[in-house]
Amino acid sequence: MLTSRPFASLLAIFAMLGCVLLAPARAGSLDRFAQFLGSAQSARAGFEQKIFDRNAKLVQESRGSFSFQRPGRFRWTYVKPYAQLIVGDGAKVWIYDEDLQQVTVRRIDRALGSTPAALLSGNNEAVKAFKLSDRGVHDGLEWMDAVPRDSDANFERISLGFGFSGLAALELRDTFGQTTVVRFTSFDLNPRLDPGSFRFAPPKGADVIGDAK
Image 1 (cartoon, rainbow, N blue to C red):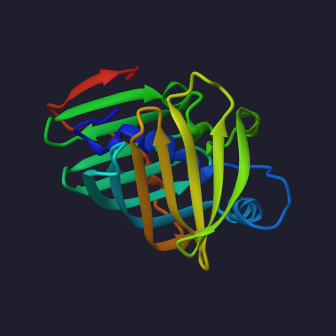
Image 2 (cartoon, rainbow, N blue to C red):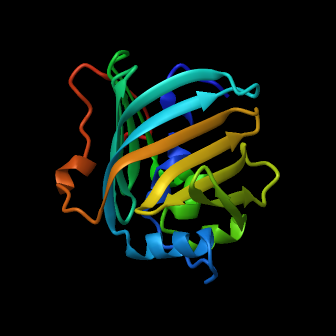
């Protein structure tokens, strides 16, 4: 589903970068995936995100930065085209839309649920909900596909692309035929991060919607 704001598929992408996955040991992308997740306790990077419709037409483009720290903490900041912040504090996910002066908050288990994020959110049991496969090499990257076993999932596939220096790209295709493509830049693995960056307090005057209590 196309939205006016770029966070539609970000909860599916986010906690993705902060779990422990016990993937099978084999050559190719699955092995790269297991190695990355086995060593990544924290990370930060810039990103460029593009959303394409079912006809491969570019319908939205944005950029910003992100960071994560296990378990369950992440921060995703959009700087263009809209100022927007998504923060996971380990218990809740906060989405702050600066233009609308609106904060949406959800319990992290409700926000992630059975989405692709669950695959990488730290819950190893979630792995059973996906069929993982090595997609091979294209565009200079090694790709892994994760396909949900649940036919009611609102996405068809999520793919991770690994380059020479590690995770380089992520693609998510939803059931409407829309594809979200994220390319990472300046990926920094296991940096020291300020714990305060994973806390959020709604700005004074902002409307707060959801599970604030």
